[in-house]
Image (cartoon, rainbow, N blue to C red; front, side, top):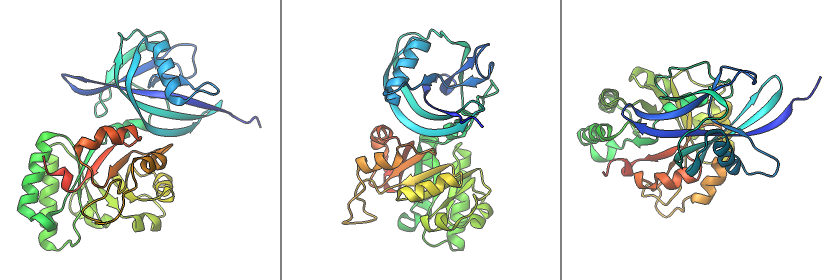
Length: 316
């Protein structure tokens, strides 16, 4: 049996803001290519000795005639095709110079993750679409500290500002707290934001959540992914991140990155360690620990999907 060749590819999720909202660019593969007519994220092969980010910039110049001015690493995925084993390095491209002039695709189309209007997607690219639906900010409740009413007010204000992922994380889930959690989830949904519950899957389902957030101990004990739209986990080590990927989770929360009030006196991982942990990760990662929305760009530079915060989620 012939061994499949190994191919590294740099792929770009090119974003723009329009009257319709946040959009990304897809290209349709031309006749005469592998999988003609399928849609893909622009990019191409990483040459020998070339860094993926350099390949990305070169390919976008050659394919689309644009010069990338701001990009960050995001996901690394693998896919087995009939002819090759492909490792895809996805980057977010937030800014570029030049007018789009396609040289390789049959067509280009600006799309939104929730309402994709083209297809089919190239198999290796398809899994990225769900990750694009994941909000870039996770707000974590602490009603046990500020009270149920104050937390509900904070959730209402936060969801009015932006679409986020709400995580209900309370140390004691008594009847009153469960009633609060159900109200909080309804508020998130009314604002167009999904919500997960930190705890047991059965409780998350009973409260009407969109998913469950697993503690690292729960993650270690799992043999299969719980059946929810969104499943994530808290991870602190490379082994825990690997387990989250094996189970096909939708995201991981990694930290603490900086010193926090939750763990006084403990040093954070730091940005360099976060970068090392996230490198080559195949699921989106939220950085957590002493962070707020002002740290989002730094987290992106490390390869994180976004920021998760407790106190920092409710201070603006």
